[in-house]
Image (cartoon, rainbow, N blue to C red; front, side, top):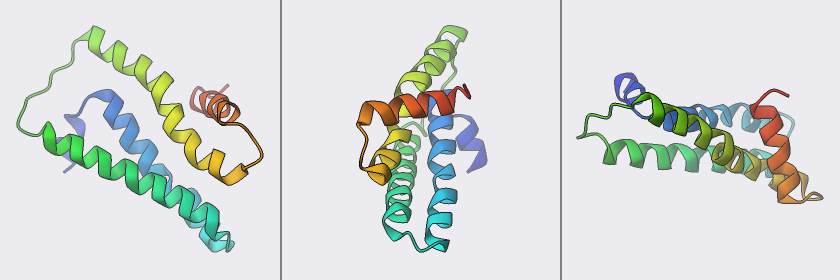
Length: 113
């Protein structure tokens, strides 16, 4: 499983790590009995892992080799698209903000600024 994960393009590796990382806030919200936020993070993370497994299954019979330009495009795609995915549970948890605010918050969290 680990070998197949390392053979995926860089964007999908980032997506998998982000999906797996959503289990931690879900477990914390569950421990403090905040069930709505726990569900939001858990469902988003589970859906992300499901989509990643479907993509890995579809790409399993091909040898994917990324060039430098493809890796750069994958990184740029990660900085624009991945925060969209990461903002979903935050937007659902806060409920008093707009999605663009959650997106910008996830961009700043993703770039650690």
